[in-house]
Length: 102
Image 1 (cartoon, helix red, strand yellow):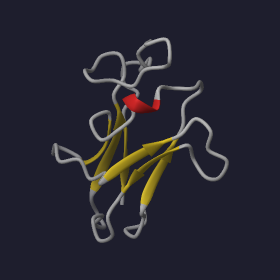
Image 2 (tube, rainbow, N blue to C red):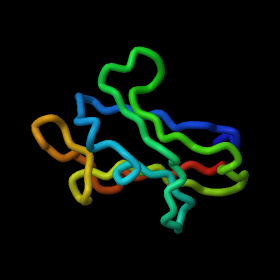
Image 3 (cartoon, rainbow, N blue to C red):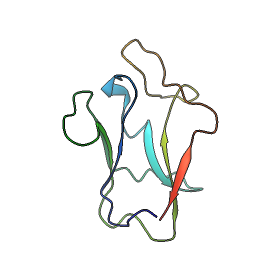
Image 4 (cartoon, rainbow, N blue to C red):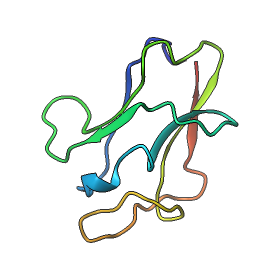
């Protein structure tokens, strides 16, 4: 279960990525079956000392109990996509998408 007062979802990568490729066009939280991105903003820093390096920020009152949400980071099979500094696209194995029910 996801708390309905959650104000962000944290994420990270196994290697440094180009922060300019991490934003609301490449990171999303949606209600399952819908397309509206619930991330009001997305931040990412390879140099984060406190908390997760990436955050999908969620406005207060956005999440509802009993709703299934899907968090997605767009990889090699999408355009635009998250890339590292060598312009390699994020590898995203088939079936790696996931959802949380709250």
